[in-house]
Length: 289
Image (tube, rainbow, N blue to C red; front, side, top):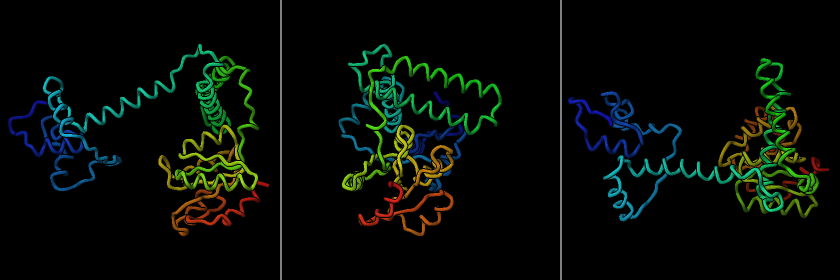
């Protein structure tokens, strides 16, 4: 419990600040700098945070107020933050902590998930050794090699030979990283009509995973994505010795001059601006032949 010094009187303004920001107005007997700046009208206290408005019924608010009378006091905003973190933690357990002594025939989804993750871990461990082995000390190299070896043993033990999915069955020609569903459907069907397979994913992280699992002939990359900038994804791929030669074409609504400013830095191979016509894709077939 925070002790308030005699020279500082608790005010409604302090309560409002803590409710709004999730931060304390008083710390170690003094008013915090954040609270002082907030009083002066500064609203940059949240830094890298994003405000999300949530509406609740009066009944929900009353029930919460009744509940906190007998427990440690928490504001509704703090409850939301705690609840989101707990939800993510519990859902992560559901996805990741499946029983290793599973019946392979009865748990194909778990097998697929496990195989994906093991393959990604192996791939990045191998990349670390290939790119940075000479820069790392012997102890770190030994640890990475040991983890890689154990990963391989784990894969051999828990991925059964019954899993006969071949690379050809899951391979695709075009990897489309795009968060707009209608665009994904349009582009995917377009390439299908031309005799090429196209895999659409909606986040940068998913795109990197798919690239490691099945190397495409070309990558179409949106720039504004939910998790990370397409510029950063492009730079990451182009700096990788294994994947740097994959052609990357930006597919974006950002003005052309802004994209051009980033072409040299990202080493992208071209760009197509939205809104586009399907004829704009014709130059891509040189990469697919």
